Length: 279
Length: 288
Image (tube, rainbow over all chains, first blue to last red; front, side, top):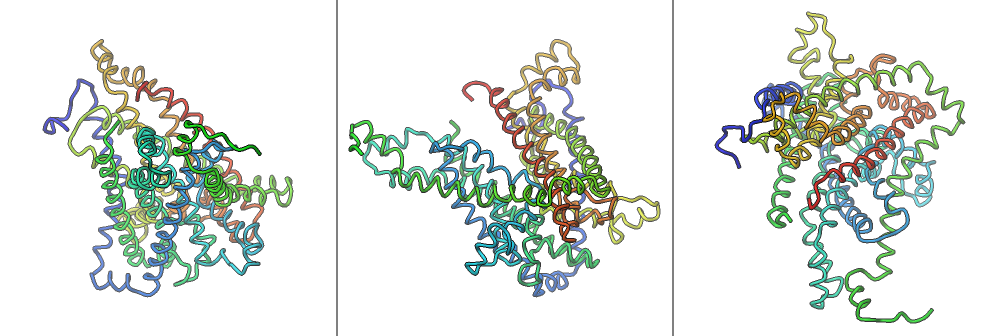
């Protein structure tokens, strides 16, 4: 990959200066503040750390954030695949508009998404009213958290899988078909397996985003401790009570979890590259 | 209805796509899901904002608190996008134009803010600059205000938007290689001349693209800013924070009026992004 760390492979100027500035800016904005969080957590004894994390309220908040984020990511995985399939493989009126619309959860500020979803699913809302007649309550219950997490996660699966499905070699499908495979066999044995790395990556990204999500969730959640209180909100509450140690301990657990998730995503992408050599 | 003619070519065609019933079902599920989960929330913002008429809408937007939130949001976005643009371009130059050990690690570190919960992005600055924080006592002694003031809001925003510019420009600049720059240097151009006359024209659409996305996130950031802002009315409330406050006070028209501005920002961003992506695709080398 390189020539032993000597640095330059060319005669362009500015490597030392730009690298120095990059590392300085990265340290000041990202690395030192994040290190401060871990440093703060070292002020806690292991017992203190453990008792904060295993307190009923913290455990429940973590369970709610991770559990519902996982469930929402599963929904995103399935719905994302269906949406990608429709967008890439079929032609229908409004296809390009729906393709652009997928990015709205990326672009819409989370607080706006939060108040909008709440208005939509509240008991008198456009969707909340008919659902209430069926006896289903979404807003101000854990179901509301679930809905908000589905909303913010959907673009991750679609945008990760879409380019892979577009680039998929049509010849492989032709070959499968000409060898007498029926459509279902071609899809399930030829196409879907080559989408697996992208699907898992999209799933992990949606999961990671939903675990840490705050703005779009807190309005619709109801925020009842132990029932519908997400972990990021508990961090905010502990901060407002000046219980910095509690906030720090929860934050460290969430950070470590998201670092593990990125690591998994990186491994997945490497796996995908070795399975599908560059074309 | 006449029987469809089955010729060898259409029979083969049938093997390459799904039966029509399944096609229609898949399209219907996709369209319904996107309508319910994405389109309706967007529509509801505008419906609520105008629910008491246009007069109430504009009255809400011209409220002094609303104006101060808009000003603060624009200022914070200008600071954070400006700084991240400069340093993002610098980082992309170092990473894309040179080979060095640890490049993958450096890119992962730049990516970190994408995977940190917004609340934690705010928390780290509270731990640094808060009254109980590492630098808190020194800041208090010297009467420097970072937390619950504009510098804190800007820092938290810079943190969450940190990766946007560098991440958009690195692949673009790697793709373009270094030959043009090397030619310019060998013809006697200085480093800065080379950058402004050779590199920048090649990446201008990418720069615009990254500024657009960075700006949308900067103006819309909620969680991180919420933790460091202190919610001082008329002083440290950005637009998303004001949406929350008004909403919690049951001032729904006002809350959704501010929200509608942010929603329009999102829509404009998406349209501009689609146009820019077309420019970026045209800029790609053929066969790529």
